[in-house]
Image (cartoon, rainbow, N blue to C red):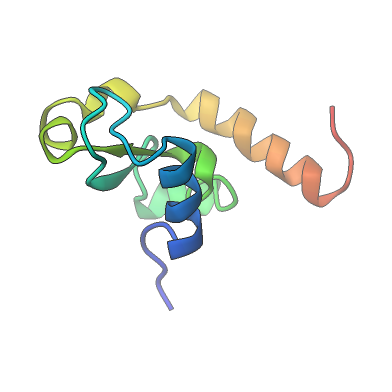
Length: 94
């Protein structure tokens, strides 16, 4: 099965962490945006991180259309998050 997007529970966690508001303008949140795009290559390299709450931000409709670029992260940042999540699975934190 080709998984795409955040699970409902992850979306709920992100939504609640932002109290239901857009991260950019504080209007009501509309949709959840991946900071690192969820393409096939990123999903293969950053499998733990790609659909984790650390990779998501809720935005209102207007900001998702015009401001989502403000929340993009680099592959180097994603690698740090991925390493951290792997360390948690191995029960060893830096």
